[in-house]
Length: 593
Ligand code: PEP
Ligand code: MG
Image (cartoon, rainbow, N blue to C red; front, side, top):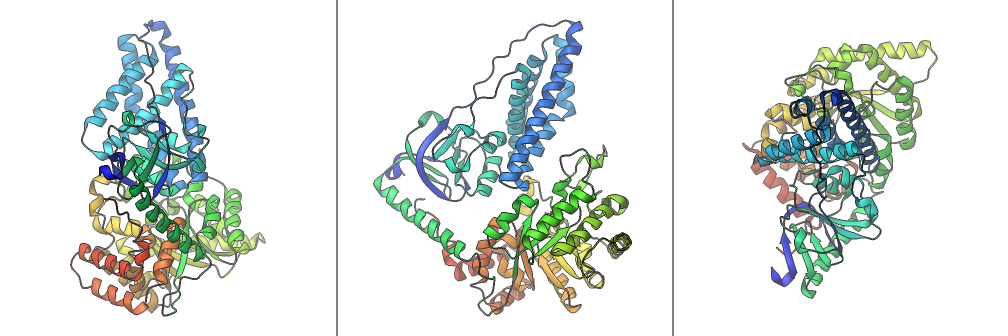
């Protein structure tokens, strides 16, 4: 590999893309010197108070950063700070620190620092990706708490950059990454991190190349050196040769050309070669994401995850606040449709509302429509807000996590009560508002023929449908390889749902991550999906594939897949078809490896 440059470092390809520029090497944070200052019993109370205040300040700082990320990158990514907030609330950490302070009669910062370091060492010594990510969260939070306890500012962060560069760091903690100014960061290279690390997730959302796991890189590089970063192969090439510059120049050109081609499709419809229109929509979590819906060429919003309005706040938003948010989305996009999903709290989105009920299996517990039907006042405030917003645009409503007819009928009955209340109060709403159900629980897919009589459309949530069909926790990285959207059991449930819906004259969308995979879009279309809804940034590539697809090809693929025994062979065939019809989408890959 020497031919590529003076120094070639190999890590993990964390975010696709190639960039070139000067390096900015972020020195690893220097550990703070914390002395074991002895204290007397009389000082315990004051020390505990200092500790509580530092925790509170840290919490506020993290919430601020979370909001900034949510507005700048997206609420999905802001969720990574939930893990850090959980560290702050960890009762084990809290109790052990106080115990140590009392037992050793040392100042609280020493007790905290000492305990956090030992906790970090234990977590990071286990060979487990998930636990080492949690160790990073702990370290990031502990550093912040300690600076707050000592009344010191955190060391310089990425907001100090003034010209475009490739940032090299030992580790980019989420709160550091959150401070980066996208205009000045061409790429990210870190010694620590994995493919699922926060750096990787944020870099992918920001669409900048990233390489993680570059062990031992820092002492070998200097700020100001010229380098190439290859996020496809996971390479950092310092002082590249002319040959490498030429080769990578070609990749960058292909990358730019593809981006340009995808951008040109923005105002084009998602139609197949045989003129079949597939509705291509975007998933959003807050009104702040509305500009992206248009920017990436989606036709409307196929899933508005309203629960994000309810997170990280002490009390749920009232009807008026919700009405304002839904109305803004409806008005901005009118006449394009907006499918507003009612609350899907619980599972991985459990806010203060859950009180202190700890569930053993949150994904099988008090979640979504189950919470809403048990708390009709909370639910009805949302239903009224959505109905009222329907007077201002093309609004549709759907319920998440429907598992039986009974739930659907109960929800519809509450909606009818809301319509009557609004009529009585002279509040306008669209009387023909379409009401649908999400199909994301196997029982709902199996009973789709029955549900179709009481819902005007279905939207298949493959994230949960895969999770519940295969009994694979969608968040657990240890079993990520078992999370197979092309599993034949999943495909049969999707097909069954579509057939039942079409038999009743209902249309069907797919709004899980599967719909945003260009490789899988033909399969979903072949299975009969009328609409695909994906994260805004994923829309252009899906549109590109749709516009090169023949309906018959997709139908043939789906018919073939429904006869297969394993998800792997189906995925392979999906890849072959996508590469065959849209080779340029896959051609950007580098030549260096
Ligand atoms: C899904 O389950 O596929 C879905 C779209 O909903 P969420 O990811 O919000 O659970
Ligand atoms: Mg879901």
